Amino acid sequence: MENASDYLMENKDEIERLERKTDRAALERQAAWAGLQPGMRVGDMGCGPGITTRFLFEMAQPGGTAVGVDLSAERIAHATGKYGADGLKFVRHNLVKPITELGSFDFIWARFMLEYNRSRAFQIVQNLTRILNPGGILCLIDLDYNCLNHFEMPERLMSALRGITRRLEETADFDPYVGVRLYSFLYDLGFEAIDMMMSPHHLIFGPLQEVDAFNWTKKLEVAVVRSGYDFPEFAGGYREFAEAFQKFFADPRRFTYTPLIACRGRWPKARL
Image 1 (cartoon, rainbow, N blue to C red):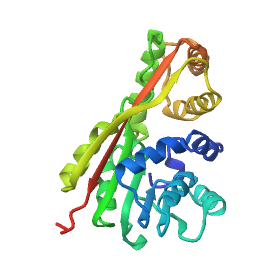
Image 2 (cartoon, helix red, strand yellow):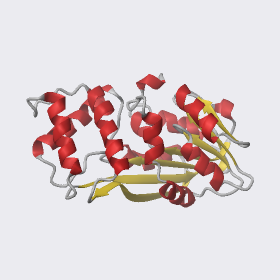
Image 3 (cartoon, one colour):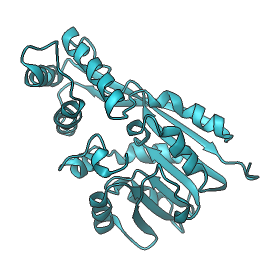
Image 4 (tube, helix red, strand yellow):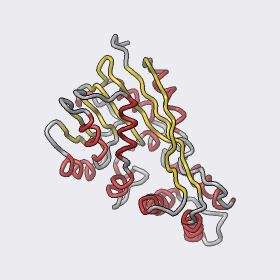
């Protein structure tokens, strides 16, 4: 992404979507597993509206500091106004480019960011490695089969979802399978003490919760429309597809999940 407008999910409600879908308890479990401790200098890469950075900052107390980094000027302004504090700041930066001016970090967090940078994911991780302190921790968290696991979804709906996904891979640099690549990134860069964790994400069953309805409606309105897919499965095009998907998704018998894969590693104390 060269500009914030290139971000696949860019829309007027993206700040609200990101804040509403952030699960503090899940985030804290993941960060504790990764090794976040009080006193660390934390970098939250692809911080969005800043809510995750604030939670990580609070986990780093007493004595910790945090920097949230995002490409969107709007989200950085929102984060600064709502979550900024002494020891917590937000910076606009394109993570594909070198970021040494931010200083170095004890703990770097990159969650749900690499999926939007299919061709540049390894380059971004390399850039993050260059600002890790010796002995510092890098935690990468992302998804596998993103949005593609739905029990007994009608075949034409499933066919359309696969087609949309392929289009987004080709045209929007989206990677629905990036989770399986995370281990190789840290391994190839020479990290030590690499560990992995897998857990469910998008675990949706029973009556549809409002936060899930809002999140997936935005996916339909933004990512699906931006894909440019022509919906050969549906005579009525996108509109018929969207109606069929929402009907399926509202059925309490529906079961939807996405595997979340977390990978953490420690940068050698003696740099290569």
